[in-house]
Image (tube, rainbow, N blue to C red):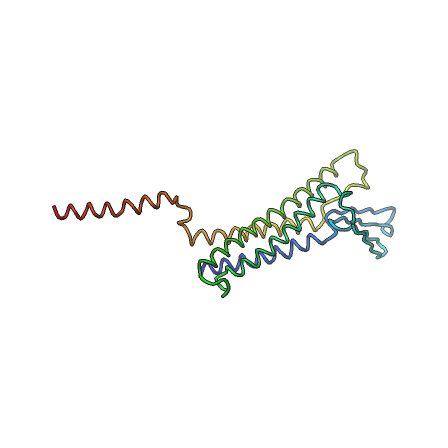
Length: 219
């Protein structure tokens, strides 16, 4: 029962992580630049994401431009696109696999099959978490380096947007949920961490000890 409750908790963490990673991938505010201008009436907020750039004017107007050209994008943006999409795919696969492997579901057949499905879902979640952590950390590093560069004009400096924080937190949730699934499997299968040679040695030496003990009784 304890293992089933732990799996359910990890599953809800994974659901939160999946929705967060998907939201962060689509949001346009990976980095933000606020230009106040001469007055608050002329204030402009520039948002840059993985797929589009948006501009919000203080007058209430909002316009976005899609990034059609892949080769014209910086390397860290291209990598962020690929890894965030990979994180979405792996997390969705982990949701499907872990649903089969959870104790509270009637899918997956026998107990051994459900156990393997559970650990496979955990591995998918951990891989998705790593795939989500890489672009968020790299993207933040590029923003900070550009912000601290004295040769860059103030108008071209940006700050990390909300999508970066959402992506980082969601990736951590996915990684933690994957660890919980894997740990629950290890608790149920401690023999998997024992050397097979040692197991065979113990099984072969045990009968010899018993036979020697029996012969001593007869003598």
